[in-house]
View (cartoon, helix red, strand yellow):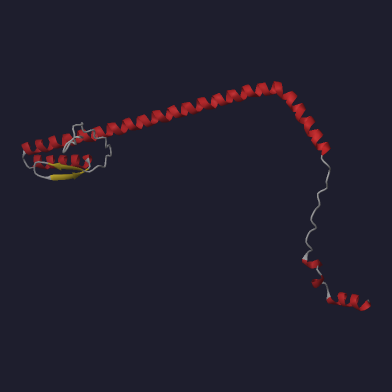
Length: 172
């Protein structure tokens, strides 16, 4: 029988969400703050300033401790983002190096084939020329007929002067 775990799993929580705009909730000492880690950090800093200017050093220190926690989250997100960018750059450079190596190999193959073709090419070229000449001599020569151009509208009988056509019919 399969035992299902209910509630919390026994696996460690690997939070891989590196989205800097992820919404977080903070239950501070007096206030509940929502937003990204950066906005929560900024809010706690302003609360600490307000508390200090109000004369409450204990409250200000408490807000600063909360702000420090969210500052660590912001720094962690920035480190993950920087590592991700660096990883992508390395992958991109590796792909470019691989493509360049493939292009060089193709060029070397083409040069090697070109040298081999040059040695064999003279014989092949002469064979090609001979076969083309034989094929050309065996084919009967045919003239291509051109289509007669369509008569221009000025040359049609409809547009001829009526006096000429009536004179021609009258003389017959």
